[in-house]
Image (cartoon, rainbow, N blue to C red):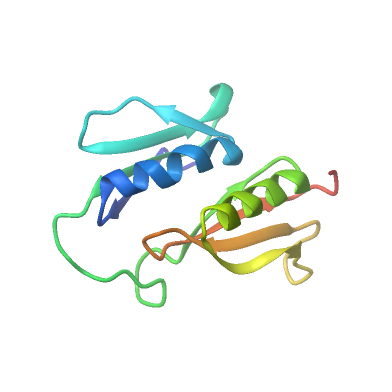
Length: 132
């Protein structure tokens, strides 16, 4: 199991503003850090990787098409949670790459939405259950 993931972003304040309202929908809560990072941990004491955002110290465009991070997937408990994440992304003017639907090419059940964060990083909310 991964302990934590660190992601560099071009604007830490923008990351905090974007991820603050989003992460509870993905079953994460804020994790206390110093002013050099914004972090989240699995909610309610659940196991899982913590997520840290740091301000990048070098300018370089991000691309999921080159060697490096391709996307981050968050497992959510229900299909309704996938729809809630989608609604949040649309509400803040986010770029939806693939709207919520079943993905039969992956082991069923697989219901997910894919979108881009403000830095171009592709994110996914996926439910591995048939319930709501």
